[in-house]
Each structure stands twice: as structure tokens, then as C-alpha cells.
Length: 538
Image 1 (cartoon, rainbow, N blue to C red):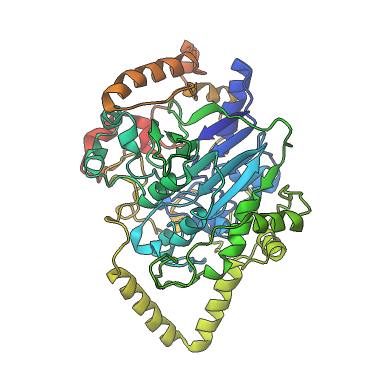
Image 2: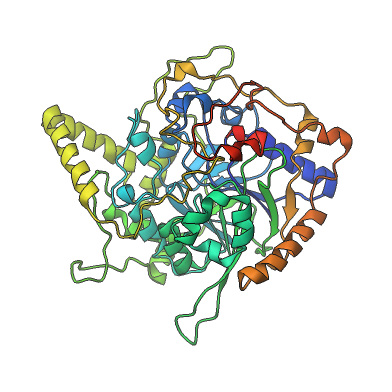
């Protein structure tokens, strides 16, 4: 089957789906599934904008709300993970995954599903070591700290995924697995993103947690986004025994959804022709969730996952075939994920803007149903209980306890060598929070949706390439030649074939709402900003 893979969406769903329609019209290629690797921005209303960790000037309603309200429906089944620029309050309603709109499915903090027999897994967020060993304690309304920590990867999600034994076909993460750049064309990467050099050479670019999962899961494909550059790599995994068959992972990172950027890729994936067209639960993953349910932590206290070090009575939470069979029997062997999408918040109305709408902590009926069906803990219900207990203990005592937690976590050594989220400090394509005043009042930003572009606008979304059969590389030198072949192969299949009319549609300045203005550059490397005007928006 044909799978479309997208980088950072940034709420531009209309543009994404228009590009897929263009692909079908020009090349008769219709993907069966769309995978989005984070920064999806499922923003329903003005309150959701309050919960998105971006400077106020980047808070735009975009077009997701039209799919949430039912005004539009995604033309292709869409599965996505969370990134670091999300409506965290919305995604938090679905810690185990669920429908954010009809035909658009979120994988949760971590998750595994099946589609036409293809096993698809993913982990949301980005890595930060100072939050890695905490529980999911955040809830709206967020403060300056929790609006960021809400999307930081936690060790329990990595631990759950490491319990999987059955093969994974496709895996998604927002930030790159650390060290993956050593398996691709580093020279070309650093030519495009020279500001990554220091972190690449010190091997600190990327997520060590994702790298750990890559080595454990060994999926056939691994897709990422976050760094806003297209990069391919091929990793041959070491075998643990002579009996084990060698495995390899094809890695691909993609750019953000903007004209003339490599934000979309079509790949062919082997599937089960006898399988249905519905998205399905993964029985092993459900069994792992049940087995690890007692490990859930909703506090700021840092803690380590069970390991074989003499301190834990149990450290192996992988599941038996019998446990998987029990899940199948519970579901009567019907793994189809129910289409039980429910509106849980008011939808944005362009005619009646509500700039002062405040976010509330919501328990989603989908999560309630899922937890009841499989005997799992509803994380949001547990958080609310913890808040109520904290209120009863008294405000002073609660603040004192939080201060101790904060101090303790800062002094705890990280289980990884460095604290790096996988993002270069000088990446001009990424939204920077600290310098831009990410917590400005919402009233200072626009909540109007981006103006509709004429249909022919999508003609400028030209960088769609069909992945070649082989992405194998063995060294930088080999990659130099292979990359040229890959680019040539991709170029021959691009959906551009630009005419003079299409070239004139390229955006040349201003933000996505058509607003012009001079960008005040605060970062060190100002020359980077002069390279491409479209990098001014994210």
C-alpha cells in the first residue's frame, strides 16, 4: 500500500490534503494512509491557543478546527504523533490515543496500532532529561513551566515500548534518534544546516531515548521531523545471536509544510491484502498497557523504571502469548478501533471570536471508554484526584512539596550524558520560546484563520518525491554518491514540473496570514535568515 509521510504540519491541514489531491491528479497516486510526525497543532478554539508553547505572534487558528467541527473531513486516514508545538490540553485528553476528528487519529503519549496488517508505533513529544523521569503531572491551565514540560517524553513511555517483542514495521518520533546522522550523508546535512555541526560532532544532536528505542525495536522504517530538513539514513542493526536474522532501518526526516520544501514523501509498504481498511488496536500493545498499569505516576517526583539491579522484584514487563490471547478474547477477536470521536470543547467560530476563553482540564469519553474496556488507569482522572487531595492538604503544604520535588529533580543525575532535546540552539527554522516571550497574552496575537488560498496555490507545494527502493549507505563517501542518485531519482518523480505560472505562486515574504513586516533577528547567525524568506514563519 502507499503511505504518505509528512514532517511538521503546523496546523496546515488544508495545504497537506490539497497537496495529496494534486499528487493524485498529476500522477494518479492516491495514498491509503497519511502519517504526520508531530507539530500537528490540533487547535479547536482560542483556549487551545493558550496551551500551545509558541510565542504569541505564531498563534494562529489555522484550519484544524474545520475538521473538528465536521465542516470538513480528512480525505485519507491520518495518524499522527505529538511534537513540541501542540495544543497540549487537547492531546492530553487522549493519553492512550484516540480520534481528534473524524478520520484523524492521535497515537497518544506512546502507542501502537495496525492498518492493513502494517504495525505502526510512535512516541510523542521531545526529550528533555530534567523531566524524563517525572510522571505526567501537568494539566491545564498551564504555567510557564508546565506548558513546556507537558510535551516532554517520559521514561515510562519508553519503558512500555521496550517491552514489545513482535516486529514493528513503522515507527515515528518527533525529534531524531541521537546518532542517526552518522548513518546518512552528514556532509550534505551540514551543508544545509551548518549550525548543527557542533552537536553532530559531539554526538549530542537528537534524542537518546529515541536512539534507545531504535536499537531495541529495529523497525523497518523510522520517520521523524522537528529539525525542518529532509535527511535519509540507513542503519544496519547488530544481531544478538547467530540465529537472529539481521535487521535494518530506513530512516527519513522531513521538512515543515511550506511551499518548495521537502515535507511530504510517498513510500510503498508491504501489507496484508486480506486485512480490512479499518484502523485496529495492537493486541500486544494493549497487553503491555495492562501489564504496566501499576507503574503510572502523576507526580513531579522523579523515579526510575524497574530494572535488573537487585532493587526491583520485577523488571521484565513484556507479555506472554497467553496475555495477548486474553486481549483478543476480551475483544472477541475484533480489533477494530471504534469510531467514537466526541466533541469535548466548543469549536472556533470566525464570526464570534472569544479571545478570553480559558482552557479547562477535560476527561475525554474516548479515554474513559478505553480504560474501562481494558482495566486501565485514566491518567487525567488520577491527576484530578491528586489535585483535590493536594487542595485538602492545604495550599502551603502543597507549594512546599512542589518546591522539594523541583529541587530534587534538578540535582538528580540524568541517565543520559547530556540534556539535549535534539534541536540545535541556532536552528532558524525552529520557533524559539525563551527569547520570543512565549507566554505573551493571547490578546496580542491573531486568532483569525489563515485566509483560504486559491486552489492553484497547492501547485507550489512541489517537493513531493517517491522514495527509491534502496537507501542503503555505508559511509559518508558512499552517501555522497548515493545521495546524488537519491536526489536524481526523487527529482524525476517530483510533482512539480513547474510552469512559469506556478513559479509565480512562491511565497516571497510575510507570515502565513499575508502580513508583511521586517523580522527582528535576535539570534547570533543573522546570515541564515537572508537565505529563505519562508523561514520567517513556522
